[in-house]
Length: 134
Image (cartoon, rainbow, N blue to C red):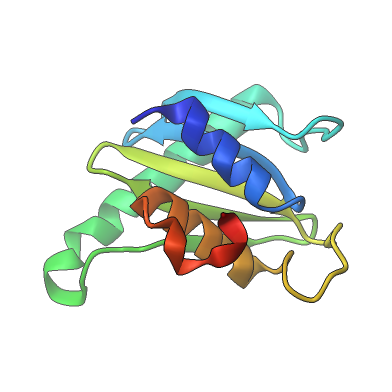
């Protein structure tokens, strides 16, 4: 997976996205990208620990996939931000954080559902699913 190109496409898809991190299935960070001017809420150590917990949870969900199907994404919403986790192939996870208070005010973009749709389309490689990505 070409991490930089995927992360840039995700970051460019919506102004509300604060950062994008690619990690392996153990939660080890492989690449990250942050929006200019965005301050992290967590330290590097706290972020690493949080990603390890999220990766562990993702593994647990994956064990249920024979019965309920493959996971598409998971959302954790907090007062200050929302973090979404997406599988990227068999060996990686993509973590996307967005602001809880939208910075976009147009009607078509900026909501959690829009970001989820954009990221799913980007990761699938099928950009025709959402014409706003072209």
